[in-house]
Image (cartoon, rainbow, N blue to C red; front, top):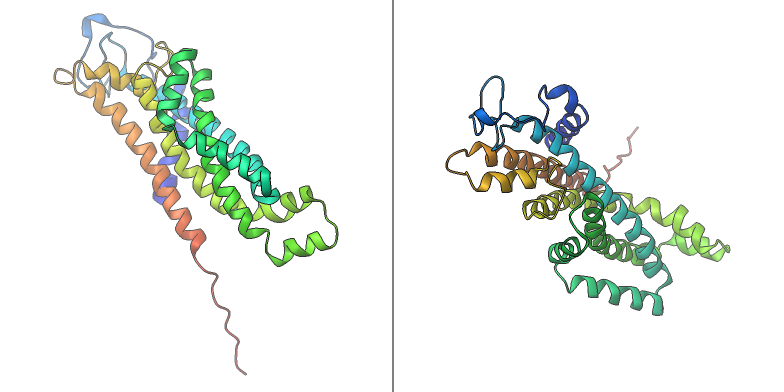
Length: 269
């Protein structure tokens, strides 16, 4: 968890401090020196248009983190509301919501997002919208399952017995116990969202061409992989580090939350 958190923190700092970390303009071009190998002045080399690849990778971290955070936070919010309705109310409402979720699961999430972005057009807003539509279902199923278990606990039954409203029971007594599983699920979803965003940008359906994106940089370097492999290596390593960081952090956090509380021993006099 510490290693993953450190990698995530480094990437967040790189994204926030991009104007100060990169001394070159990511949109500047130097055609006479195009495809130049890494050097002291250009640590990651130059691309097909003579642009500084280090600056583009640094600014590309902003796109990946922004898209993934917005998609995951929106998915958590929708999943929390819909999953709570299904799990607590049950009955016909639960049946209808679960059939809708099953319908979404019938389509591969990446292909559904790909089709939506292809119809709406490549832009960051459409990319977030398309990925959000498929991201809430996993959270809704998780939260529904947890609530089905939690609503049978004594403190929930006791709150119902004294006449507490369902909204108060869910918000005050059930949601605080969902923090651990939801945070772990959100951490893994961040990694998956970053890969999906990079994949859509690789296909030209992510961020606009004028916006630096890791997936678009990978696609640009695909045609000159033998001549200038650095165009694909450095964006790929950036994706690897960020996704690895979220996966390691999620694994460590899950192991930490699954540990039983320490036993309390009575002292003998």
